Length: 139
Image 1: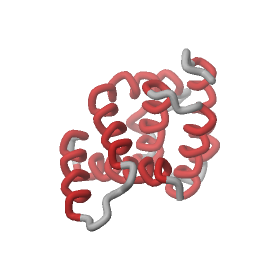
Image 2: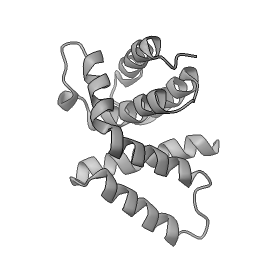
Image 3: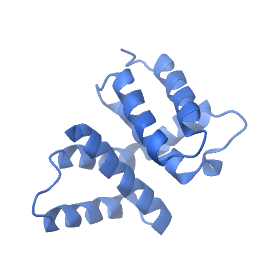
């Protein structure tokens, strides 16, 4: 598994866990740092995990606004927590990094296929396609 893929999975785990436990992203970042410090071999892309968590902590409202604007007959709160976490990471990465949209989409869909709801791949793929087409960073 590529190191950025591992980093996205670790960020997904931290984001999902924080939401389930009612913790802030700042607390999730502290928890991640503690876990990384306790490991004999830390995640090679831990800086990328930190970037995702810090980026979502700083820009989460803007990311949620993009997601909400892309939903039809749904609200952000109604989404499955796993799907919401995947979308938040992907939208943040599309909006705030230079990662090509097709890479972001592919990584998000892989997480959705493994961890998401039954219709997560199609649902998340549709949202990300819409956001990528409307993004000024469209590659």
